[in-house]
Image 1 (tube, rainbow, N blue to C red):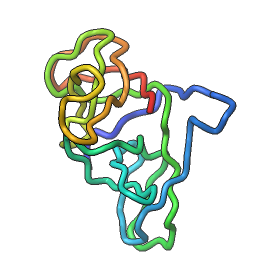
Image 2: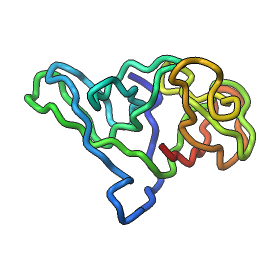
Image 3: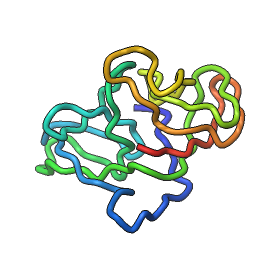
Image 4: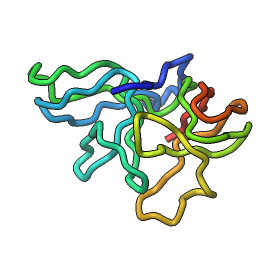
Length: 137
């Protein structure tokens, strides 16, 4: 995987909403900072596509075959991510569906089943540049 999100700092809600554990497969290999999709049964997957709900961002690396079936996932915080296209300050963003990139989202959803906003741009960025995203899932 490439272009993983880099945590700048996370917010503390005091209600356990910042980091949550999700089920992952023992044979899954997930890099720290990878965007994760949400599957039925509170299962997180490293396979992200446009229109698929997001679980959040992996808080640590998951090595294939390490015996672990739980993974901590960031739900809120500020992360440096890579823009897929121009993103302007304040724009809602969603997963671009490839290599942990983010793109501008329409309002709330893009019309695709299960699509959702990952967070909001804290600055402006051109394509393939780093941008600070306030993640709020």
